Image (cartoon, rainbow, N blue to C red):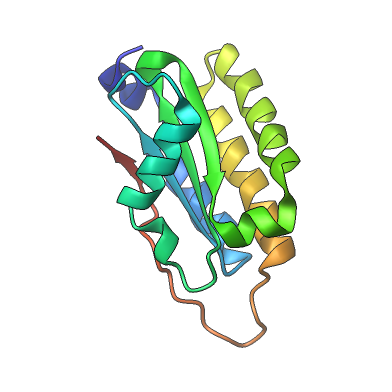
Length: 146
């Protein structure tokens, strides 16, 4: 699937709303990125994009990237070191499985939203908002693309 077709098929507003909602429950950061390139290894490409997007610069190392490469029909979810320490590798496979079911059915927005919601659940559990404290949004709440 071409990136333009993929981006046309997904509901950006719904994805951004899911990101905003997930981040409102925690001190974490979530981003979604769609790549126009064919990638042989989505996890490596996601890790590289994580760095390019400056996601390793969050104060608590609690950023999560959902990376989608429509041309390769692949995706990956990567988290910063703080997230990996708290939830372990099994969590990422759980999120990926939920997203994959929706993607196989052609429900791309639903798959991404499901991934954002699950990521938000982990962030809320491990990085809850401090009562009365304001949380600075460290990263844009948008779907980036290359």
